Length: 132
Length: 126
Length: 358
Ligand code: SF4
Ligand code: SF4
Image (cartoon, rainbow over all chains, first blue to last red):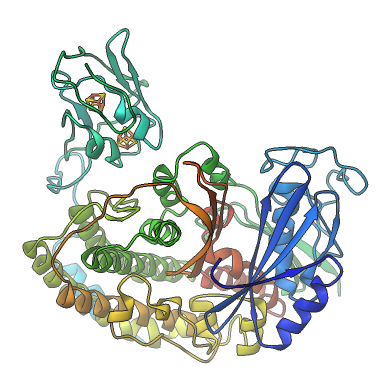
């Protein structure tokens, strides 16, 4: 990408996001890209005055990623989408649909992944207690 | 208040904007992409159209020399028409009529013995 | 006071598409909203794995049934940038013309639906009658009414001749007159102002913080229009983003109404400046790299993230449609409003749910 891309880690993502919010950036969206069997890229897009800036977070699929909806509340929708389609989990979501935003309650597979991994911990969604 | 009244009166006095559809139809525009048809006698069964079609609704069987299109899956984009090297495919401006049953357009063609020609996807037509 | 939970949608007379809102209501006042999506999810992004990058143009056109040209244009810009293709200038102007026609028809459609949402049927019919003329232009110049398939990677597929241009210009004049005749009704009529002024207010600060885009953002006084980036031929045209400051439904209506007229002006400018020449270039090779491409859709900024690794299929295609960014705004706009205002406010963001779920 020709725009500036800042690598972030699981620990620093919230801090960096908070910083960029103070600088006056607008949250655009997030993109999840599957790299291989175990790893995904989560790319955060921000915009100020039509100038884009990206964060790149490379994590393994079973990581619990801290949700940036504590900083930009509106990020909850796209985080839920990634949670549904890639089977990745976000911690501390503003509204956690528990993988029922697009999927039916019992789906275990991650429809947008070429490689599906067995998920552990927070995985099996408690069927219908969807919305908070 | 009553800003729309003049408009309503005007509409009462002017012609109606709609047509009495089945009895009165508008002739289609020249460039409209309606039915997809194949001049099968020109077709060389090279299957370029089948490869290029985004909805993959064309099947070309070179062994049985058939060209088949599923008009219900076709999205009338016209990509195949642009891609056809023999200009066998064309689109009529009229739209397809509604049908009771799902019907496939199935045509029997023949592979022509022609001058050797290389095509995009490497399939050669001898 | 007791709380009641009311499900709004997915089938609701005012919504053209399935969006479900769980409204918590105290008396008649909404206190909490939880949106739910997923009724029409199609997974078009995933299709990039089995369709090659040329065929994806037709696939992304089908993301949105109203502004297909703009989706295809955004996708093509991304791929062209990745492959270093320079599109001929005439094709750039043609893209502008068709995308502005689409903006017009989309805004006219919305103005109609919006009038319908507060029961002004006559105004609804009037706007749709005008829209039909725009659709005619679209059908006669491109071949289809809505999903026009004119964009391809490397340019456009159809050209406009001078007869068509003069015909479009005469039609545009009629359309402009007819739209202007409705201005007084739309912006001053008691029925309209009563239902829209002060409803669903989003302050400048809120709108920016939530990350809303398009008319919702501009209706709240933020000057942001992706067209000012100057993609396609917009850098050669003269225009100012349409901005209103009140941030209510009325302001958003005004923004869209003025943008419709602005589009007419942009088409005229593009037609007067259009150069002669080729309309597409031959594309060789395969895309490789990572690119983010943005354009302004009628509903706001549209973002495509494309990643390719030199195969004919793309690695990942991500589409962020404007409605996706605008839905969180409902959570801020609705609390404190009366239940009967919910349809009007929801419609004021111009929700396009199929777009959102792709
Ligand atoms: S591309 Fe043309 S010649 Fe080739 S199979 Fe299709 S219709 Fe026949
Ligand atoms: S018009 Fe488009 S969808 Fe229909 S057969 Fe041709 S390429 Fe396929």
